[in-house]
Image (cartoon, rainbow, N blue to C red; front, top):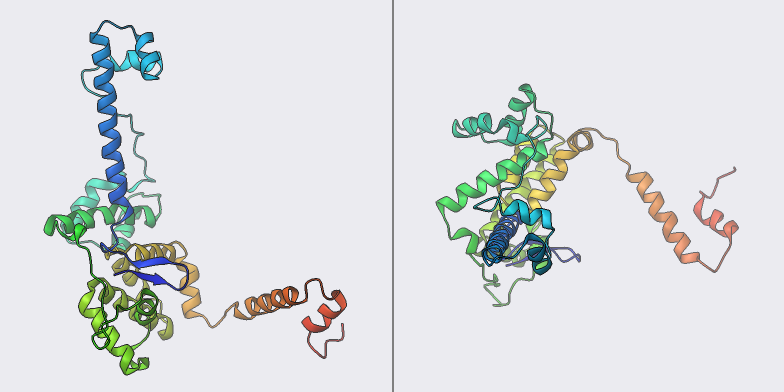
Amino acid sequence: MNLHGRATGRALLSDADNITAAGSLLKSRLAHRTSREEIFTTIHALRNQGLSCSEIGRRTGFPRRSIAKWLQFETPPDRRRAALKPTSPWYFEPFLSKSWKDGIRTGSALFRLIRERGYEGSQTHLQRLLAGWRRAEKQASDPKVAHEILKPVRDPETGHAISPVIAAALCIKPRGKLTPDQARKVDALKTGSPAFVTMRSLAMRFNGILRGREADPLPAWIDNAIETDLAPLVRFARTLNRDFDAVKNAIETPWSNGQAEGQINRLKTLKRAMYGRAGPELLRVRMLPFRHTN
């Protein structure tokens, strides 16, 4: 089942529980590797026919120097990789691997540990590394997870498939505000979609953090959201993590830019409604307060 956010059509739950972009990236790299091997074999076969490097270059379209270099190897040469620096979490891979095996698996805890050891990068880069480890463990424990296709969830009373828009709205609506019909649909979605259960649980927790005006549980929520491997949740959690200080202030302080944003929206609405019909004097009258004397 797919869940889409509002009218944008952006999927909240994908058919295969959000097979992430890392899987596609790995496939593309393997395909590129296979292509390099085929080119390498072709070059050596042409060389065995007695052709020169220039002639091989004309037939294959590759530079003569590249062909001459490849002919010096018996297997396709690996690309040179830049030396790891403290800005990369892979620089601390041995320490991270040991901590991971010791049971320290939250991104925030590992981030603090490697920062003490000189890590200069961001927590987002670290989370990407950890996400790959989590996916590898999940696929090793259950190889069928990546290929599971979820069927549409149907309303048990009407038999109709629950639309993505309705499912997305129900995902963020508290149980106490659900009508009997909506509660029935939520129960059906929980039964038919494990991903919906995870997403709704995290949505309710996030709602509690916002309404409780306490930002202390937020780091744990971000780590749990990233561990789900649900692409939209992972994106949202990483965005929160990048602007963590701003999000924390928004949760804990009473200040808001809502008034300024509301006035901007009001002004734009007035301009669009009056475009081509009136001048700045009427716009001034409609825009400024009634008793404005300036």
